[in-house]
Amino acid sequence: MTVLNFYRLSLHLGDVEDIRGLVIRLQMSNTYYESVGQNWFTLDSVHIHYNWTHEATFNATEVYAPATYSYHCQHVSSLQKYDTLLVPSSHTDSSANWHITFTDFQIQAFNVQSNKFASASDCATFFTPAILMGLITSLILLLVLAYALHMVVHLKHIDRYEEHKTTVYFPRTPEAELPDKNSV
Image (spheres, helix red, strand yellow):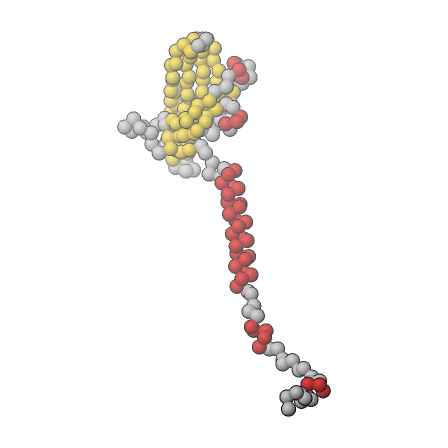
């Protein structure tokens, strides 16, 4: 693993309501991993500078993508309901007083061409709970169908058993042997 370079993206937002001089800085690094033979960029931290003297710092966890891709996530947040990707760096600074959420967040630190994002590496996992439940339900239905087909294939036809039956002997009664008196 070799860290190639660091980049800082600064968003100067100016005065926002009671906050003066709001600046959001995204600290990123480009790292070469020998095991995969590829450069990856990571968002290392988010710094919020406000009122010209205060700072809140959040460490970014799991915000990374190959350097040839961009990174996209529906929510990059310090809130638990959005799968906390931004963690306050310490409880001694004012970061514990802040909650930050980027909605529809997309970033690409390196290899930007034509001022457009490259293909995105998305943070959404493939196996969400809804997809897992759908797969499990489909598997259960498939097993029931396979069992039903197995039972249908192994049905025995009733006519087969009729061929092997012996003839039934009905003894004649003496009344049946007597001729009918009215028939003569």
